[in-house]
Structures are given as C-alpha cells and as structure tokens.
Length: 275
Ligand code: DGL
Image 1 (cartoon, rainbow, N blue to C red):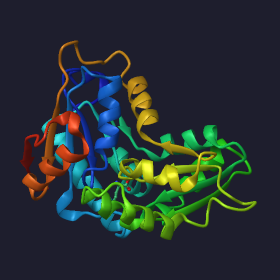
Image 2: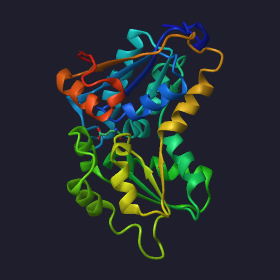
Image 3: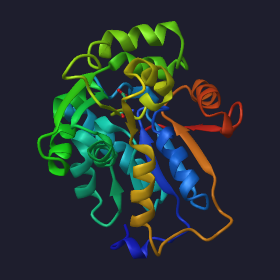
C-alpha cells in the first residue's frame, strides 16, 4: 500500500462506486471536468439497493467495494452513493488513510445551503440516508436556521435501475412521496436529489416541484471537489476512458448504462467481479 497520496502514480484511475447505475451521474460530471482522468467504476448490483439496508451492512458492503478498487490500483476514491457516504465514509477513510476519499453528501449539502432562498430545504433520499440525518447535520454546519425535511423515496432507485425515468408511473410515484411538500407557507424552496440515482428522474421531479424550486444534485460539486483534491497530481493529457465493473448481471448492467448514459454507446463493455 502507498504511504502518501503523492506516492500514487498520477496515471492510476479514479475509483468510483455505487450500488448500481446511479453513481454514473457522478462519473459523468467527473468526465466533463477532468476528461484526461481514467475512471474505474464499480456497480455493486448484486447487493442493491443499499438504501433499505442497515448502516452495519452498508458499511460492510462499502468497505468491501473500496478494498476491491484499491486492490486494482486507484489514485482517489469517490463514494458515489449518498447512503454509503452518509454511514460509511469515516470507516473507508480510516481503512485507507493515505488515499483521497470523497463522499457526495457534503457536496449536496453545500449546493443546498447556497441555492435555497429561504432555507426551506427538501432532501429526497434513501431510507438509510434519511435515518442517518447526515444531510441535516451537513446543512446545519453551512446554514444556521435552515429547515431540512428528508423524505425517503426508495422506489425512485428501482425506477432508475429499470430505466424508467419519466412518464406517468414516475409522475405518480413522485407525487406519492413529494406531492404535498411544495405547497403552502412551509413549501420547500429547494429540492436536493440526495441519492445519486435521482438526477436520472430530474425532469419529472422538476415538474412536480414547480418552477420556483431549485433542484440541487451532488454531481458537479463532487467533481469540483475532486479537481481540488487532485491538484498537482492530474493525469497526463490524452488519457481518459471509463472502465465498468459490476458484481452481477453484466449484460443487463451494460444495457441499462447504454440506455441511461447514451454517450457511452448502446452496450458498453462491463466486466463481472465478485467482492
Ligand atoms: N445511489 C445510492 C445513493 O445515492 C444508493 C441507492 C440504493 O442502492 O438504495 O444513495
């Protein structure tokens, strides 16, 4: 193992993981801002969803995913999952003290604290993220007096994994979870997409929240955080590329990635791995 971040070769890829396709919303933002970096993406589809599992189980899965990527050789790790960031980030950082490790909750909280006009912030997330109260704490550190309501929306994960990102079914599930939160005097003025799968449903969520509500996702802010963390250790120009690994059903994963992230081609190559 390397003893300092500077000892890790700059040509090593950035490791990224999530329970499934959601973390690719983060990978896509990283590609846009750092096109020369090689990205190694792991979707732990065999064990998804993470959002309904206990903190102990999510921590175990997340540390195993991190170990797998570290063994492959990475120069930084992005935990592209709010649930794992909320409950397992410290465990991962402790396990790999010399690796830059970034989560996504701080980025989302930062975006919300800046974007909310009156501090009435709705966070749509998984059950695990809401239970952890990680968003409430991270927003309170940045914005005193903010009123944060975290709403578990577990079916959004299943819809995104199914490639069902818009239309009447999505509208109806969105109304079920969030329908009452953007009316009246306590109406939210900002909606945080506090799960990396949720930006895939953004058009439907924006329609439901209405034109006065700002949508915040973690992707761009996480990419900017990574740019800062890798300053001076950037990959040489001309590299780039995204390697995909899944822990089950690689053909299905490839099909869904192709559908949801068309820029990657209709059926990108996906390697199968056991953790
Ligand atoms: N995309 C993940 C998150 O940001 C996990 C979704 C799930 O597996 O429940 O929370």
